[in-house]
Image (cartoon, rainbow, N blue to C red):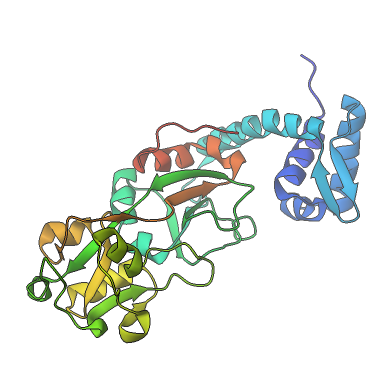
Length: 295
């Protein structure tokens, strides 16, 4: 069995994953020069150029991409297996970064299905630094700033007007008998342009003169909009997946059969090399993603 020098292979894999010799050195506890030397040794052993070096930046060649695609999964499997053998109860928790709306509504049942394990939950907006912050799983809306990661859809929500039972009585099926100030609008922040708005629902319903955000209450996201609607603040253009528990309990009522679809799905984002870890696969199974296609 002819194997490449394993220390050199490990240095290559870390540099390819980190996209930097200096970051690879920091992870491995050596200097960037030591990582560079190990990579050069591997290039010499394989008689292939693995990186294009452009100043302080490195970029994988075709040979480098092929080598990374075939070695990173195996090294991850070895690391995962040895970790399971030596686990003393102090292994690093699974770090999940998520949007607030998912943390408050969609995620808890998924974690309940996942079962008891060490998890660190981070609530934050997009885009995030998955690599620098050692984040294992990111739950997001759209695909903001994660082009180099494995991305899969979680669900694409439908939206429909919702209100608490008392306020629902003020809704006329032919025309909403509500003041403009009683409509709840969502502002998802500067990272998004394609977000669901009342104007889209009014157009789908065939009504003119949608309520203007300046005359109602504007909140940061779907979960907050639902919470406001439950308290009778106003009528929300509610996301049906996020609102399932509230609809089931009677805290909210749908006010129409006309729905619109969110412009983009919610997505799960993971570094390619982590897809082979058992704990990542367990989370994906709990989230209902059984097939993992790796580019």
